[in-house]
Length: 457
View 1 (cartoon, one colour):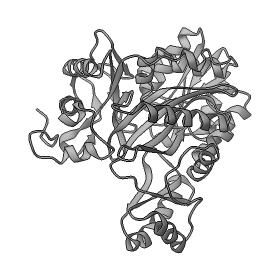
View 2 (tube, rainbow, N blue to C red; view 1 turned 30 degrees about the vertical axis):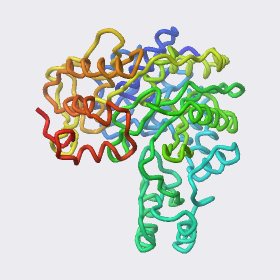
View 3 (cartoon, helix red, strand yellow; view 1 turned 90 degrees about the vertical axis):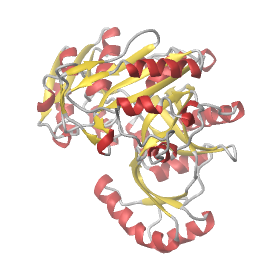
View 4 (cartoon, rainbow, N blue to C red; view 1 turned 60 degrees about the horizontal axis):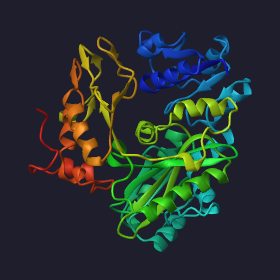
């Protein structure tokens, strides 16, 4: 591997470019016409414009990205996260063009991308799954039979969905009859696959995920992350490790994640996601993400392992650089996603020019960002400005550091979630580490002094 094309934008493109530079690789950025002046473009050795501003005509154009890689003389492609990162068709085109895809095989992406097949694979590996249908359900009669065995409420999920998309919760047989054909139609439109399956809704559950890594022969985990603080099923804050997770549960969960990686002969970085029921001390497999995660920095902070560098070296043919027994988790890390969104208007995106951008620093504070002062926040893409990541020897220390870091954020020209995140860092439920997947939305509608419903200062 000598020349790497980074098929992404923003902070993850910057993150990959930095790792590639440290390995001595020549780098190629891709960009839309709206991003020609972006930071990731200037950081690369060269760049290629792959289309106009809309992502569907640029960053999501598989053929244009592969053509750019060939034109620039790249011999490898890193997809980052989002965009084309979990498209088996794109990975197949990269490999078919004689290039190295930095990630798992197209077959593994396809297998784990189909949530029904992923559930079946997890079951074969002995990984507990949420009670539900064994395969896709095609008719209302089939769905009602499954719901009769699991009980209501149930979640109807698109087989090709992911990232919180393609999910509908129903609480009765009447709702199920009405919702099933709608979700099938939505799945066809959004993912090109109308298949859906049913799962029992695990209420007041926690979302805990395990970072895994494989080189096709050896498979390891790097601990777990707590990702339960979500708004509309999108993560807002992540932690490593999960507060209050019993050690026995942690061992079973990480072991299950490694078993699934081994079952599919996994290659590269991946994340196995679980729902954890604290009352029953049970966990169930949700899905496997076959890419680097947005929240990977918290794992890097507590393990001291560079996951993106490891992605690149494993893709180049090297074995994993460490065995399981050398993975040590120390201290606690938190990541706050700073978005160009206005909490006072329902978190509407706030594109514009960053007239001022001052991001925090100091001991054990890491900021991953693809933005800079004077730069543009385009209206066409995800609104993530930066990830503010902190480490402490204890969770309490990390929280204090997070508050200090968030106080240092200064942004002018666009609205941001910084004030909201700062209030969240003081919320009693968050401070106590006592929350689940619907807690944040409950706190946001709480009008008491402890709630997050107040307007930003």
